[in-house]
Image 1 (cartoon, rainbow, N blue to C red):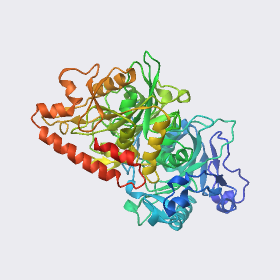
Image 2: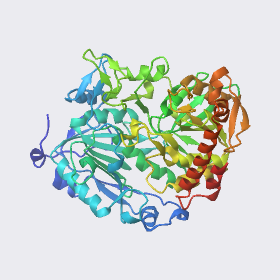
Image 3: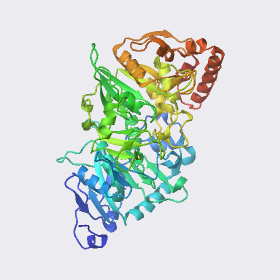
Image 4: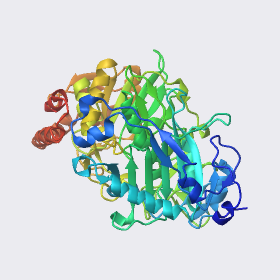
Length: 579
């Protein structure tokens, strides 16, 4: 039975408990909330003074006083419902359908993350390198959202980013009950809170999918207040805004601790010389999840989307589940992911479905950006808590001209290609990115500050821990996929390359154009398939060497100009793209 706000004013009710328990309905009267009963405190460390080069940086990264952030009062609140109860609530949504696998498939209004509507809240927006709004505007949006929430039924989902007791970050999602699928999906990605421990969130995502905000693109806004540790999402029903809402703020915390957040999958590959820990960095839709889940020597995935790498190379996990792109998902090529997303516990988002409940992962009539969440407990995976130092890192680049299927990089080159973040955009980034050639530093569109910080920290960490780094093209060589002269880099070829990297069986030679090393031999890639390994040879054999040289010259000029756009970036990194 629900408790109304009016009833709450005359009835003694408990606040949202610190320790998650059974499903509860807790009414939050606004006068009590404003009195401070539901306030929490957040303390942050400083960013190193070395990188404080602008006024807004001094505001954001100097030592912060404890911040107080109220949980907005609502008509009713359910605190930490079970997975089964969240699924029951989601099943009642008018845009939710049950598939023949007994999982739920929700069709959303917003089909991808809303980059144009995402803003960092700062004191001086004009001094920020990010899209930013003033603190006054942030406070206005917060009040607008708080007033809206006062009349809504809300859900609380608590959990951790990370599972290491000494490193994990407590996070709270506060979302409209009418969008319970988002709460259910987020619960699958959070690491659980133990029932006997106190819980105080360090980061909070306040999410109102149905609240339109005039004056912002598509009446949609995501306001990221790093100082208070709160992200407010308005008028998007795409689950990615919940997931990234916490992880974007977590990015800052990891940098504060001296590490680097990586938009990366992680896997453990058994070899004769021991298990190898591999990291796979890449933009959404470029093959990060596929590369993470394909099997080499019985390899197991650990993480799909974000990890932290710390001084000394130690890797920390972030999530207990996976948010996978489902377009063109094949049971033959990707049996692990296919099997996971067709389990009753998985949530689907915008996947094509017929009247009988059958799914079609190849139908893009509504969107290519079909998605699914599932828990790592639903598949065979390596324990996140067993992670140690990383052995190698792959930088994915979905390209279509002269990038080889694999190239081996030295430390300076690794930092440069990490900063370049080159790839072809996909539907995961929205219509404005799909099919376009992109450069996204760190392949991390969720980094909340100046990008040169990423590059310099990457080079710094490379100096403290020996890590083999490779550039991996998951697109094609010689032209767009399907062109007569083009050679597609297929999933089995990429898998053979990853296996060869882990086992140390690839033979290399120096590339005369870019100075990195290209493969002369990869076990498992033979005959005509070897054309994807050495683009210069492919273009020469096709009588197109002049075209190859023009592309080389163009890339060198464009890359150096791009990197020089980051004033504090190390000269060593910029020089590395000259070849």
